Image (cartoon, rainbow, N blue to C red; front, side, top):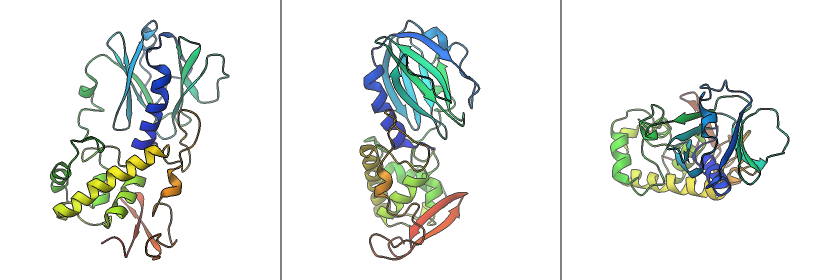
Length: 271
């Protein structure tokens, strides 16, 4: 599933191509996604696209009529800007035609994504209302994360993957951030000391920033807005490296299933 770095990579890729463009047509080839595509999506025809923002793993595209298009890539979705005459691929479900002869296409083989038109403040939508802090914002501090974790008695890895604690730290990035911070995934989140939480905040910021710079992580389905895979996989320390030597100390990387998700750690480097 595309996580924060993959979604941010997509946002940066498409914004420069769609911002200030006029919407000339909307084509819905298949609308039965995770939530049905908004019936009034076609009414944005004639409007101009404004800023393209991100909240957690959602993209928000401002439209000049005051509405907002909320997009989620689901498990296997992607967005790309193509020439208007480009051949439609299988699983290209939605096309937003733009001035200048381009089209924004929503591609989603598993149809777990969503494309909704919102008419009120986006932050009040049920999907966004209860989200935690953004890990790359200045407001995400040691004190903020420590307060969030103090309410939890679950293993730290599961707490990090809960969007109410902090958004966008999915399975891959939780494993990698915990490795960099030297924290074992099974440690109770409420028992972390302030210095260890400070290291974790720094590690979360670093791993997400580096992944964005590398275009995200492609393990199976993800490609960016240009159709290229993400290359952060080459920089993973523990994720997907079961029984391989730790890149720091040489100890075999351990693996277990925690909360239904594959979890990787180094027995020596993480305590």
